[in-house]
Length: 216
Image 1 (cartoon, helix red, strand yellow):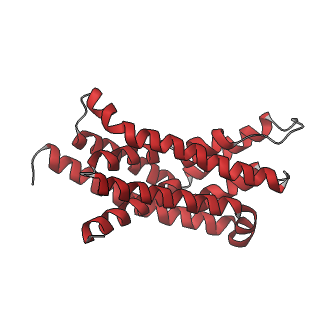
Image 2 (cartoon, rainbow, N blue to C red):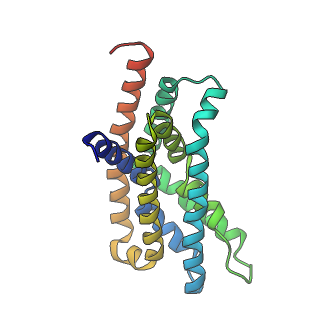
Image 3 (cartoon, rainbow, N blue to C red):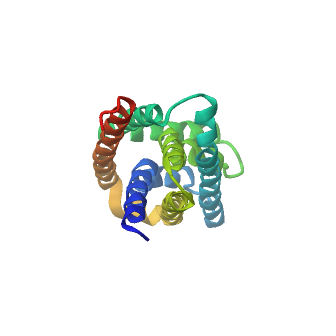
């Protein structure tokens, strides 16, 4: 690959890794599947990632058409995406995002605590919004809309795909991983990723403003 494609892959991979935040989602997955058979936990891991993949692919390929249909410029979308990602970054740094995830997981557990069969959590809340959330969906649309050719699109899809594979592996190993790292370490990782995401979102805002006002 050329240096430009390597740089694009690195930027896309880091962005999606931070947004999906698999280490932060793993404790939620472990909680929602606690006490269920191993076969069910594996099924939920595969199905959750599959559902999230379909959602992200849909918006990745349909995003450009959607922007064009709504007469939204790429610079405007870049600025909006940067603002959205910055809000998500603030939530991650102050652990509001983790708190909302835990509350959502608790609601699901309460709704289905009397069910005789293990609950199917693959579509909601795992597939969406915990894996394929607003930030990752908007970012998939942005990167694919900005890709100049099929090579750049392939690199972006490879970055998304690798992150989803990593998420799947973490889900399959969620129980041991959660016991190993503990809640405090998982919280620290989420905060660090939030700081990185804040920097990426600031860069998106700067690029969007520069392009919208022809600042060079």
